Image (spheres, each protein chain N blue to C red):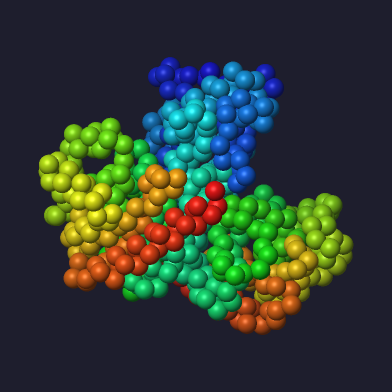
Length: 249
Length: 249
């Protein structure tokens, strides 16, 4: 069905078009999209036209293209992430009232930590994460929690691959990382100073649904702060989120 | 490019597959999807397989299908809605602290109010809206604000179409509705008792970006409550959101 000469499916080409949009590039011309998606111009223009009819893309008055609200709606409306996010948000807000820095919700997606939600205090310190942004599993507190409880296959795959140095203190030695993951499973949380940014400490706890870890809730603090208060707030929030997930089954 | 005999594009068929998922139906078999999307079984199975490779759909251990996080990520990451939502969320939280009911953010999407965000107090009253849910423009306080400031074309189209009675007190007379919309533009807010649910009153204000109304922020209150405090909180929030949108241009 509609495979191009290069062998990728129509679906793959549509995804390539959608992937050219990101936080720093929300509006593009169809020609920009063709170039960035690596598609022939006529193909890209046709896909853009079809996606516009479906509402997944929209055009502004100048004919430039941006993502349609319809795409967001389709992605969220029937998503299992919506239930998780709705259960987590009030409890994240409570953590946020106590800690007044950054509080985040992340899930495992294709060997990375994908951030579903982030609440930030106006005066909070540095924080590299973005909603709908990603971080490597070994280089963020959320990622370390998700990796610690992931399938053994996934864990071994990540440990066997090159571990990128994201900040000066990112743990990139597989043996050391393996020890940290063991400690996370034993303690039920992680405190990760400087793994994403030298100036910050991440604190994260797992969220379980039906016995499986489905997410991590984390706080990003200035590295000079004590993580104790945040850890207590996170553990309380984690227990409350898990109780709410049980109630909405 | 890959138009079926019925003339719909491949993109349209993919959208039909994605549309079969909603809040009450987050997991389906490929055969369910085929039936609900009105597609031949082989076509639906092939689209599901392609979407699964791309990560827009995922399969669980039983082979049942659910929406992938990748779809949510693609829909949000490069979306202009993300900037609006991030600007609005802290100020909606402040409204929520004062009013302790429901606070919502809505945009105009294809002649309906599409709800991007909703914060709810655990003890709050009835509220029919859902995140990524929709309501008719004439039958919600957010919708009335969006309709009041919409292009004249859109407004006339909505006024000319049948106006559905959503609750006992929904305004369905085009002449009366026209007067309400004029009053909204004059006052800069709406107080709409019983338009969605008989037991509730909606209060909404517009949010402007670059001089155009891009969203509505609203509160849903028990109908017996005074709307005064909520209106003041909403107007303050609206001004603060608009200021933050100016700062992030």
